[in-house]
Amino acid sequence: MTMPGNAIMDQLELEGYDRDWFAKCKSHLCHFATMGEGPVPVSICNDPFSYHRILDYFQNDALDTSGYVINNNLQHLLGKKIANMDEFTRSFASYTRKGLYSFMPIISDDYPVKKYVLVSYPAIPLDVENIPGNIIDCIRFTLGNIEEVIDIELLMPFITN
Image (cartoon, rainbow, N blue to C red; front, side, top):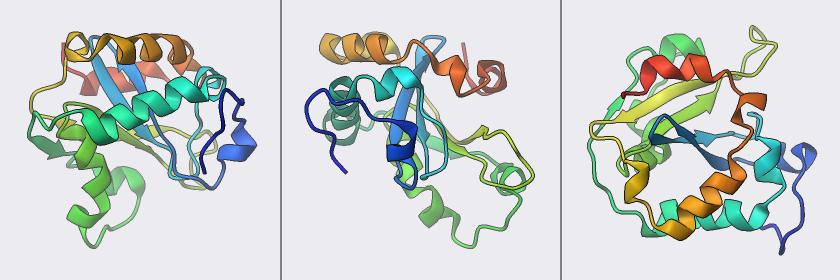
């Protein structure tokens, strides 16, 4: 589903669609896959142009710069056995190889509030200063309200200084 022009996306429009969005945490970037369930900050919904510019950069232009590690506790956090971990984590690893920390929502009746969990992290995190200025400008504009959908303190143990 492609959003035309500067139309505003709403949470109902996003339900059922896997969206990738990005947030700055410390001096690094994180990737979040909604998997059709996870919440998206209002600031991203309000600026589809910047959202698509950032997404296009990380899907098509950013170079692989890092090895990656899959979270050893992922299956436990998700509360299920993952038969083929390589297949399950492939899209997360594609962002992590570019130096981003990659998260997905816990989708479970046990969690009334949706939370994101770490799927994979880079061996060498991408520093925000190494991203083109026009992409950084988009990120600064769209990422002002990450706290409305995620407890940033939960991410801190996973993010290096």
